[in-house]
Amino acid sequence: MANILLVDDDVASIALLKRNIEEFGHKVNAVFDAKSALESIRRFKYDVLVTDFNMPEMNGIELTEEVLKLEQDMIVILVTAYASIKLVVEAIRKGAFDYLSKPVNKEELMLSIERGLERVFLLNENELLKKRLNSNDEDVQYRTSSIKVKAIVDVAKKVAKTDSTVLITGSNGTGKEVLAKYIHANSNRKEKQFVVVNCAAIPSLLLESELFGHTKGAFTGSVKDHKGYFEISNNGTIFLDEIGELDTMLQVKLLRVIQEKEFSRVGDTKIQTTDVRIIAATNKDLKNAISTGTFREDLYYRLNVFEFNLPGLSERPEDIIFYFEMFVNEIAGKNNKKDIIIDKEVKSALQKYSWPGNIRELKNIAERVTVLCDKNIIKKDLLPPAIILSGQNRKPETQDYNKRKNEVIKEFEVEFLTKYLKLHKGNVAATAKTIKFHPVSLRQKLSKLGINPLAFKI
Image (cartoon, rainbow, N blue to C red; front, side):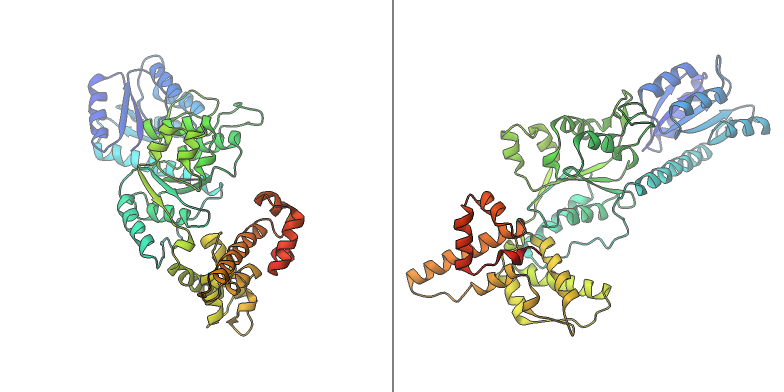
């Protein structure tokens, strides 16, 4: 659907054009003179202008010049009962996209509009290519061996066919972005753009400009107009990752986009419309963020039309070996290695590890051992110390209560401490501060458990 402005001083002619265009699903506004057209364009964003040539005060070519000063990407189609080669050449030279003769043939008019919109789409695609976006031609699937996750994916495929907003929750590395891509790939928007925006990675002031765009002079350094993601990805999908980190001011603007499908560039009052499907994701507890006042409750319920909570890898153990083998085969292929063999001890150690980094951590391990393995055999000694130690400390259960209690405590300590040592890359002082443990006591504890902090500096 496009926003189209009609300009003609002939009431009957404009009524016919309006009816014909609306039959094709476009939103149409009509005015009867050039001055009103310019006022409307200053207040509202249009994709296409269809204007008569002969009008009082300002003709169609003069209007085209003025309009393109305001909106250089607007498609302008001129209509006149007095077509001539000279007029056509002059109109195109001034920036008009097309020139039609009265009486206007409905099919010709719609073909001209569609061609103009296709040009806008190609220009926007070019803008998107400059912005480091994810490619749409990836193999978009959500592979899983987990019955629990398969049920989520089945529902997601049904939701994909709607335009409803979606909230995906879960710990880091559980595959939230992959599920978002899967929803887009199974939607009616799959041929349009899929835009990924990490709300935590971009400062708030810059993020507002990236999402909504800005005008020339809106702030220091803004030397020209800038289109935002919501403008250039019209009819596509935006994936807002780490939505819980969004500034409260931006939360208000996002709420307006969801409710009204409207926004304004930074430094501008002109209303723009967008038909973008929003998928958001977070590893935060948004209900807790609402209670602390850092996240708007009304925005939460607008985003949470459908919520999918992706379980961590420890809650879907059947996926551990499934993903590991899949990643190993993919990485082996990229590195010209064939027929990789995975030792049984490796699989056993992987299944005993808690995977705090989830699928992302598993993929990193798979890449490491695949690249380092000799004779195409992945052996246990290639695994990081945290995984080897975790496996070593899980022994068959004993019937001796005190012995079993000590084993469980030791298992917990190894798993807990290796998790935070890995997080802080073996820095004992930083780890001690995080877990509220005295550094000297922590070093003694690590020595007793046989954990070498240096092993986590990799």
